[in-house]
Image 1 (tube, rainbow, N blue to C red):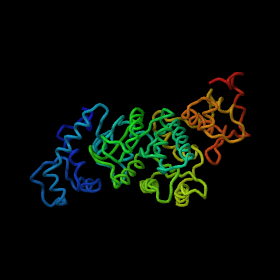
Image 2 (cartoon, rainbow, N blue to C red):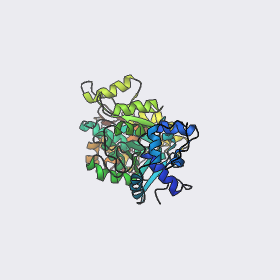
Image 3 (tube, rainbow, N blue to C red):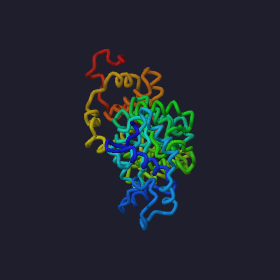
Image 4 (cartoon, one colour):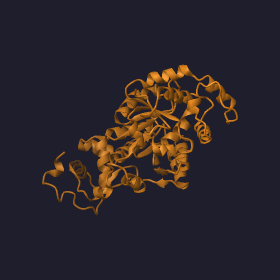
Length: 390
């Protein structure tokens, strides 16, 4: 069954874990405290003779005696379907980076590839009501950084979250969505097709069991998983009251990198990012600014991670030559380059990142790109007709 949580697990253990995930009086901190005291809560599920003097509260004791077995059966039905998984804290597939946070989820319901949760990840978050420029920036950064080897993680919300997922998908990169509902639901419902595409390239994950609705209290807790899975969090656009600032704060508390893209001093959607920068977040203008900080994560002990120095030395390929042939020294947006070159948005985003790393182009204010006047001739080593080839 896909729903097993490790090669040595049993059906009884699985039911025990699922019951604990539905316990109303049990959170990660309490679970870890009781486990440290030598109490195996999984083994105690359904037990009427609970040990005395163990620190179990009255509500938790009552639940352990009479768990929500009907809910457990619904979870088991979901887990029986292909591509559906449960990763508990005891599962070797549980992502190591998430396990490090102070309150790791007791279990993760995963639709898609569980291995994607252990890839090096960057969270990209921001406003639910961004500017069109903010959406383009999120898509471009997700495409470029996904091409460089980072999985892109976000929360499946409208606005910047959706743009980040879409940018990664356009670049055929891995992307993960952390949901604030049970695994059988998609919120917002109109993002169901997007969630299905994410599953094909990565995973949709939640700590909430089957049937749980999208209640407001779930989303701040969801944010700790977004940041906890990731080596860093990039905030694209955010007002001073944006939930993205919660994700950034959690990332800082978890010891992760925080990045923010500045904007106009007149834009309310830039003020959250400017506050983060004043508080110590790294100001980001290009994808290279992110890779500069996360280079160690990309290059050390990560199988298949790109060699950024080799990328800087490598001559541009056909797609890069096509973009360079279109670019003068007046800045162009990624969308304009996609329209003029016939390349997809993902190809343009990834290629611009490599050109930027190689010193061929520069990203200006507003996410527009221009050629650098001091860059070497990109066609020196190319065939005479290379500039026009796809």
